[in-house]
Image (cartoon, rainbow, N blue to C red):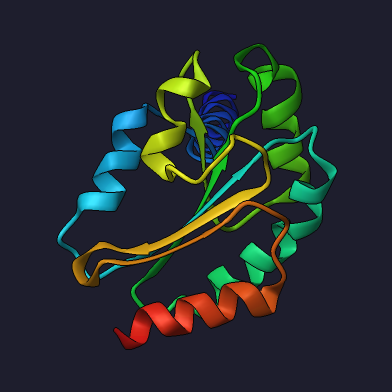
Amino acid sequence: MRKTLFLLWAVVCVFSVKAQDTLSFIKATQLTAWRQTTSDTVYVLSFWATWCAPCLAELPHFEKLNTEYAREPVQVVLVSTDFRRDVERRLKPFLERQGLKSRVVFLDEKTPNDWIDLVSPEWSGAIPATLIVRPKTRFERFFERQVSYDDLQQAVQEALKQ
């Protein structure tokens, strides 16, 4: 009986940790860190929300990019801009259903106007939006629209060549 209870406890703990690992909370300072790092990584930052239909339509492109460039210095980060009040009841269940492999973070900031310019001075704040940067070479490409896989692949290839 003790072994059964221990095994059940261990399984619950493993699944609890896994669920917590699917979503990290970040502050706007992380956006600056990604833009100013000296690493050779190409960062593909997708700003999206669960209530945004064009955002959801492009998620498979980011997943494909993440898989195809897994051996390259490319990091795909899906930055959720959902409302804080929707994280538990909407965002986390969505992530569990979708089983996304890309890194997903929640931008835990109250006022978008405080961090939008950190992404791009060109950005009006509309989503979907994508920023592709390779800080070491000062490569930067910003899209304030739904992107295709070809858009993403072309920008990442260009970033990797610099």
